[in-house]
Length: 379
Image 1 (tube, one colour):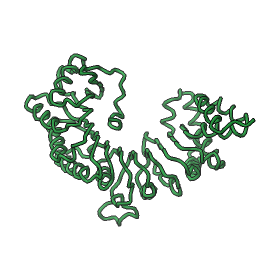
Image 2: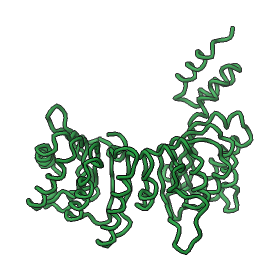
Image 3: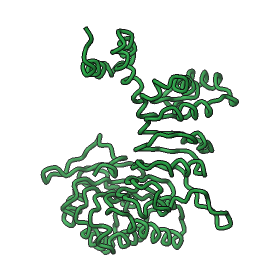
Image 4: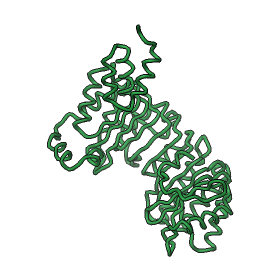
């Protein structure tokens, strides 16, 4: 007797923790094959050249299977080798030939995954690959896209087709030079990424270009320039872009090559000068926590304007002795709460070491295992 499709799907769901069990389940009957294959291919993580070619070869030659893929993460050779021992690493290097059709096979697989919604392309070691052409001809509509590819016309043209994309990471961005002809795709145009809400980019120019006119509420970026006057101009451009978002900003995580209390005060002044811009701000970082008492009072005065602030990331690397002991972190947190009672989490950064402190029922608790990297996305 045939089981209802829902029952087969439920059984496959319980077996989802073991791919070998799902493979065995797919041989039981046609019904179970459908349910098991959907569970097997729904989310794929492929690491290393050889494995990527193998998986993509299946996808490009089996359209029925390719249509089941909803989330795909592709890791370059270096990212894959981090999880392998030296023997496996040497074997992978010997098997891969530079002339391999790796990129072509990946391109053909992407073209066939028409129902893809989440795509992550991780190629973070060495030079970023100039291979955005692998996205040419893709018809899927993404919700989330992580791109370590070099920005070019291929990538811009692909993004111009993504009407549903709301979460974007860009490792590279390039504005056209003044002497260049206008590119075929203009990121500043109204129809480009109309639903973008979360933007993470390593170049502030990307935020300046992509935030205006879109419903962006969370931004993570970094200052490109190091000279003070250039950085001030960059800050003005970023703040102006944030003001032109179609929705109020909820999180801003902005990194700097050199953190100073004076520039932190300028950053806060720019953010808090416009009440509408900071009205719903929940997360701000990374700010320098001033040691000087007068600067600290000015710091608190501007933080008081952020009435809905939930999480604050502050750099305390200039403090001596370092306030990394829980007693010191606790004292600084209670001091912050005097001026920002809405804060429920504080991330203290000392020499790149991060300490998360939570406020629970009016008590300060040190969260030793707390993950801090994605709090700007969550609060």
